[in-house]
Length: 422
Image 1 (cartoon, rainbow, N blue to C red):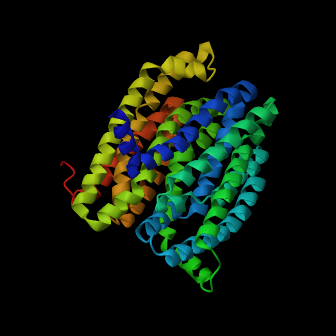
Image 2: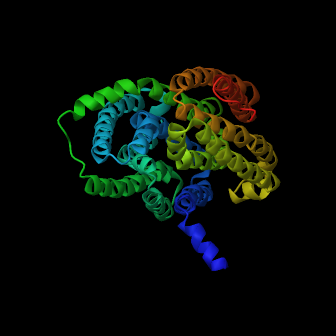
Image 3: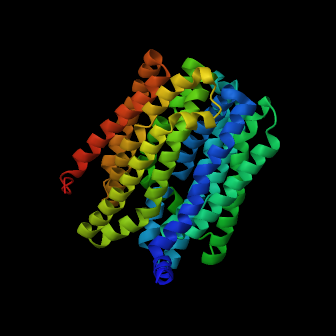
């Protein structure tokens, strides 16, 4: 009986896809935890802070080269997945657009790194971090998300992170090697993404077509506002460590990076969940608004329960977790306080990400863009004031405050459309 039940569960496509996708994402979540204690031991907190600043720079650049592909591109492929010619043209036009953006971004980045003192003093870290941006340009995960092909998404994640982990343990042997950490992450993403892209080229016979440049330019126009909003959102997510490094030095940035890495596990998990159900939620809402929103509520109700339980476990096990990251005994009490404040962030982040998905699915992109740009500009001011006057603790308090503001604004937009209280 149990065997037959197990076979029935495995035959359920949603559970099967979730299992396959989850395996890849577990590797995605665990790999930073595997390498970080080693990096702290070899490169110390100062080196870890520099790695974190370079990685944040790369993540901001990624938003530019992605240019809405993970939102509008994925949504278009999800809705028109049975139209092979349409998928072909959409994939090729988005990749042409990405290559154009990469050329502009590389030029701007070289000028920034070469002439701005903050970037120039660690130019090797920033230059090598651009390999991760190149990998993101090639990365076809957004296509597989729209097709709900989670097997390939997991393959890309696993191959990428295995290369990264092996390279870090093999080649980072002294303090000065911190400059290569982000480069190895980039190399892993490039190799795995090229494999996935070749699969798509073969399966869909991807070829350049006569109006591809015209379509790419049209995409640049269509998704400009959305990309600007995502860019501002990335400033909110990834600039704090740069502000901390500027105001408090690389050692403080290293402390922030440790706590942020743990918070980022929750963020990565929530983004993983967002990506996993996004295509299905868009499709269900496109078919039937009421049933689609019911699906959305069921998904995120269960998800929020999981997040709360994980936060409780992390809160109870704060000291063992910090000791895992090789925190010195004289820093443990202070880091314990920072960590517990930081653990409040995922509770609000889970709500804001859920509401954000509903805004996209209901085509409220304009409202989302306005909220994101406004709150992100406001957040930079809040970060600067809080960090300068409160210190590292202020960075986490600022994030909590901004998440609350964003949730309230999302609810104001959604309330006329659906009864959120039900």
